Image (cartoon, rainbow, N blue to C red; front, side):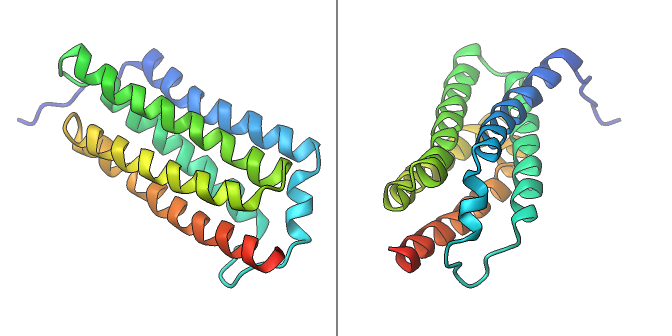
Length: 163
């Protein structure tokens, strides 16, 4: 018989609320300040999705981040190993939260592009650290990494097209 891990509801909820709440807060602030509307007025690169896709994609990605962090948090590994991996997770989450401020609020497209490259590097480091703790946790981060690579393309192309 295969071992089934019991879900710890409270840590799971906290793990989900942290990325969903912080991402939602930034999205809300940007929406009420009209920053997302300004993006629609820019020249868009090929493959730019409609605005609603960003909301759906980021909601899914933040949920996957939460589930992934929960798997690491509750993994049966030494506390120091978990702490190191979760530290990288929180650092990348902080880097992630600064990007929309640079891109949308300050219109610093080149700085945002360089920042997203740093974010991609941090996410790769996080995936590697998660891999040694929980392979499913690491694999849940792959869509996030792919989305960031796509977002870097959109960011860089938007910078080029709009000067």
